Image 1 (cartoon, helix red, strand yellow):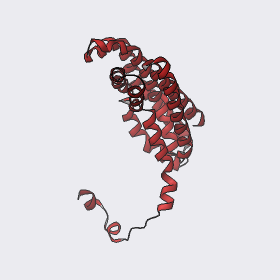
Image 2 (cartoon, helix red, strand yellow):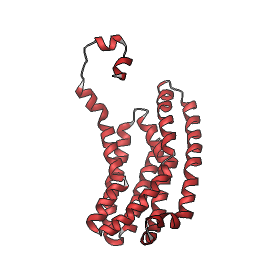
Image 3 (spheres, one colour):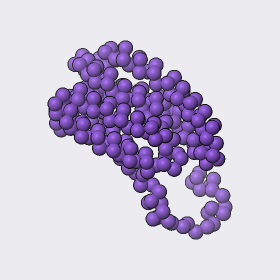
Image 4 (cartoon, helix red, strand yellow):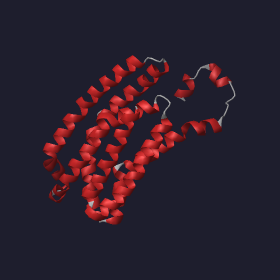
Length: 218
């Protein structure tokens, strides 16, 4: 009701026009990106671990992944502020200001990401013990996942937004989709051989690949 009240009268008066073909053509890249992000997430890892290893290992990995998410928690706020600014500067052709913005964003990302990363690496054994003493064995997994999250927090998320906010969502879809496929293959292979350490390593390698490709193309 509030949204309808906020609409201008001309908007309510006109007949809606649907251009489904054009919309579908425009959004498929974002759909691929969304699916790729889902596959690259720790939730997909938990499914593989629960299927290939044991449920108890899945619990250990899940606890570690919950703490690792904290590394990029504050960076998400930076991304929400940054994304529309990127689109605006690109639309106006102000590449110089866009470059300055990205440099400032990188500094902001580092300011909110690195301290959390350092805190989790140093305090990880005590923090993860909150789940129970048995969970301390998941500390090495926590460290690997924290570095994977740090890659995303420092450059990966920003580079992804730069592509999607400048009309290059198809390129981003290929990169993220390809990284997701690589992650699935590595996860299956390394989990079978090395257990949850292999799963975490697969996530780190796929995340590094995604971030490196995004940065290169940006």
